[in-house]
Amino acid sequence: MSVSRAELRRHVAARPVWLCRACGAPWPCQPAKLGLRAEYAGDRVGLAVYLCGLLHEAVADRLRLRPDEVDPAEFFTRFIGWTRPVRVGPPQ
Image (cartoon, rainbow, N blue to C red; front, side):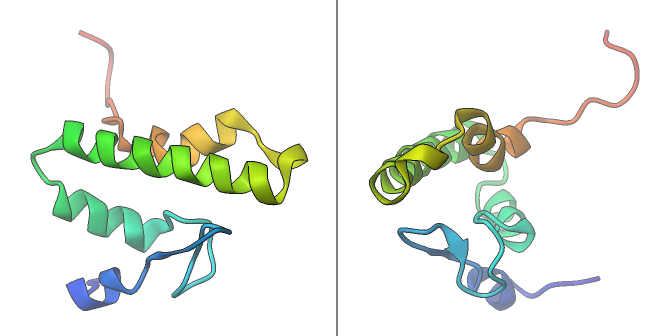
């Protein structure tokens, strides 16, 4: 399935709830991740720095809105965990 860049750009965060404006999924949703990977192709560090800043903002928003519903592991996985390369096969 091919997705246009225009379609990917529609998948932005609705703040302060951090849900996707286009599909309603927790942001970054799958299309947003595809767009971010394309935008930061060749600059994994830049992508990580950008997402760390957004992670900080998302946690601050959640603490303000629902302080009892902050799960650091969930936020890490959602914002940063997916950016790490996937290893296939045995470690070398």
